[in-house]
Image 1 (cartoon, rainbow, N blue to C red):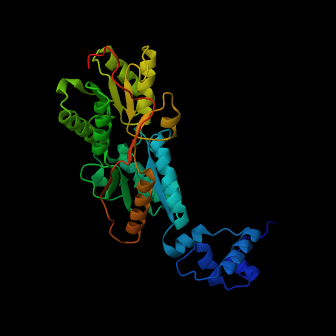
Image 2: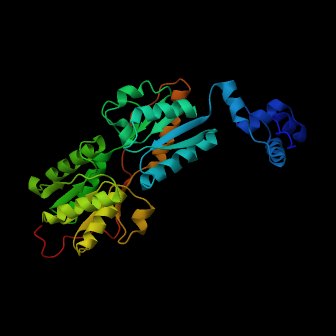
Image 3: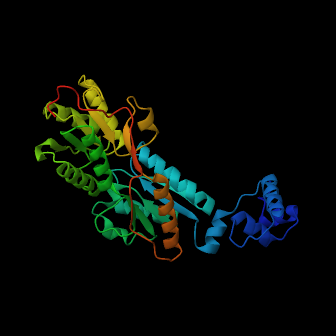
Length: 342
């Protein structure tokens, strides 16, 4: 017969302290005013006994699960991977488990989230999925748990987002400074809020730089690698003559670059390429990608902190819009190619 599961009382007896002290130390509560030596003795005792907290009992006692959900599409998207890591880095030291939910276009967005909230019993959700947010804000009010939205959506107050308009300004100004006068923007799926913010920033920046409207191209595409490659191939077939491309995401940038290679062109010899997101893939790609850096760690921290405020019944300090940190110049951008009509 297997041995009984170790309890707080077993840990207390092994450490020579009372049960309440063990509970405070292992839960890392703010009132755990215990010496470092005693805390270490308690943790050593818990480890040697193989003690694990009874999360179900804690949930029943506190009416909280001490878990939050993060909802993302495209698990292979570098930014989503960075966001998940940032959320976990903040949540875990605060005693919060993080449950990852993947959604895609095949789900019925709000009904899917309502099921996740009900069956998984998370205390709140961080929602980064565009498929959830587009046109679905009303039903989210009946979700059954607090939530925070990542990225802006029309009408959303409880959101923390990057300033995509400012980032597109930064990317455009960099290319104009290199002499480019015919630039194409791949902002993501047209009609969606962030893509439109990128388009607004791009057109404002090109107008300010004195570019002709017919030399500022906007090419919509999904965020997938293959879809971006197809969109770039179609753009090249139109012989628009752009000398530089701004891509909204790393997958779009890599798809664009693949289409250029297939067409016998190279970056930056024939076209310059800049991406509005930085990460390891942007750094190790060849050519390495000139990128706009965003504070993803701050995005995750603010999302977790504000969600926990809402879970605790406090008002959230939202919305917040985070400006880009700057531009990282790498191999993929350079002067206009000799002989180009720019």
